Image (cartoon, rainbow, N blue to C red; front, side):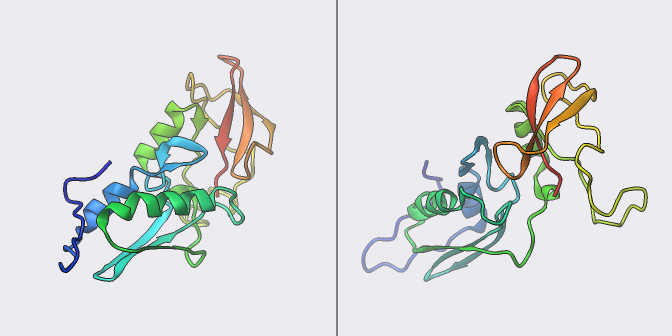
Amino acid sequence: MVMPSEQRATPGDRPPRLDPRAVLAALDDVGDPEIPAVSIVEMGMIERIELTPAGIAVELLPTFVGCPALDVIRESIVERLAGFGRPVRVDVSFSTPWTSDRISPAGREKLRGSGFAPPPHLGPLGADRSLPMLPVLGATPVECPYCGSPKTTLENVFGPTQCRSIRHCAECRQPFEAFKPV
């Protein structure tokens, strides 16, 4: 999908000025390969966008070290931003660790709507002395994304990916995946 503010450079022309909001909106079209209903922007994976006449640089924060979807995400970013007519560079960075608190409210709702329980907000670790310094899986109540019941149990800490676990709801009897707080 080409955004109205996207312009293609023609030979001999200076590249048009880029609007950072248009680039971010374009990136919001790039779905997480494992949960396409949620974008990489909503997941909080975009740390920085740098726009220069020479190109577009995107700093990407993976949700986990060794994420198997990184190559697909990189390719999707390059493909989506190609419409801006400039070279695109995607740098994977660990300088700022991704945390589950980076998931936007819209992203959390989309996760829930797709049958995934979003992780609880942790805030700055240790800021609230009533919370443990590190989350303990199974210790925090997780609401069922289908019926909203807090009567859920941890069935398996190991879900289909490193960032998810398997839970079961006692009310609606649905199994579901829950994002682990990181």
